[in-house]
Image (cartoon, rainbow, N blue to C red; front, side):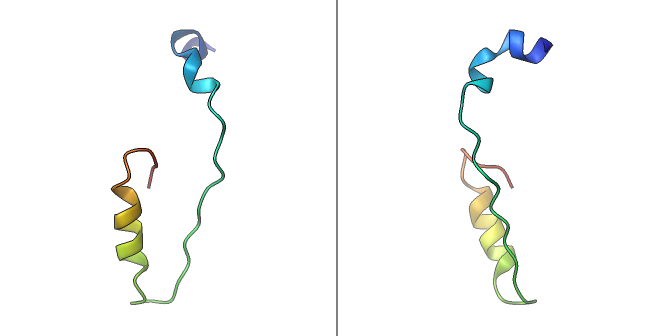
Length: 44
């Protein structure tokens, strides 16, 4: 509740469903994770 009072704009943004990456070992999933982590808008 306190956070909503301090930064109400955070609670007005639409929620984006998570992107779950699965893959076999040594198939590039770590590289994909690192590339996605570079996006300043997303979280990894």
